[in-house]
Amino acid sequence: MVSREKNSIEISKSELCALHLLKFGAFGGEDRLKNGKNFAFVAGKFRLGAEVNLICEGEICGKLKIISSQKITDEEKQNSVFENKRPGNEAIKGELSLNSRIIGDEFAEFFARKSSFKNPRISAFFTMADPLHRVHERLLRLMIDKADFVVIFLVGSSRSDAFSANLRKKTLEFLCENFLVKGRVLLIDLNDFSALNNHSDPTLECAIAHNLGINKVVFGQKHKHVAGYFDHGDMHSVLDFCDYENFEIWLMPEYVYCNKCKVLSSVKNCPHGSHHHVHYHTRNLKAMLYAGILPPALFMRKEISAMILAELFPNRFADLQALYDDLFPNDGLIEPRSESEFYEELMRLYQTSALKT
Image (cartoon, rainbow, N blue to C red; front, top):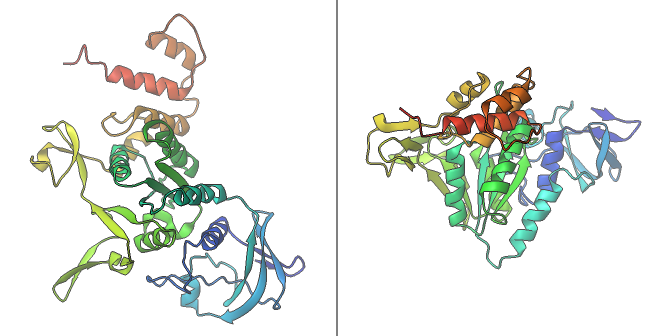
């Protein structure tokens, strides 16, 4: 929507995020990326030299001084990193200034850490964390071992059963603050950037990482958008578009819990058959959580399961305090307890070994 009276352009949160990424250099200096994504910003006709306000959710978030415009095709409009829901096929270029702090502080921290190393080894991990489970943590620990620091890019989900963006971010923040080495991991929230929704464009993820000076990106071999294909007898995938200099892509095998090894291991280094393997399928974990069931700690940390259940089932118990005091041991002090604390204590009882049969 373009307002002539206010000389302004209404943009979405996704487009605001894309403008920040553009300003931070995440899209590089070309007109388009190797995978065909472009940066056409459709806005209608404005006179050259005009200063246009950018409006997001009713607030001025920046300005754009128009320096040129051009016609684009419908295909170019649809294949842009911007949502481009405004009418017309007139794309504009201009000098951009942004005053919104969306993701700005996180990128400022990224560049500060990057500059503190002479030749930094930086790895990137893109995830929806929907939900965050033990395999995510395992991969992150492996990455931290091989890098100066790891950047976790939290991407959005448009799936009908997705947990809220705030909840997914909250679980990742908890993991980073309590179980990963501080200073070796950084979380950047790209939930609002719809072009990365559902973790569906690994080539765009690689382009963003490379343009930011990141050396390595990790994907799982079972990632459905990294499907391989044969061409003239050779194996290829969409990641062939990502042959950047000094850039590495790790394709990690599937991780399972083996009830013979008694550890989390990859299917490549476990000597036992698949009938000994417990798989980490997110659909099954979500089915349990949406049913109100605590997944075993084998799958997820109890604190993270508790956070999710407390949000999914608020005020679930008529008298939580009485239930808590009756079920769990205490030191004689009665203190108000949250639903998350209740689920955590319940998991501790599940894990008690004395009476196992």
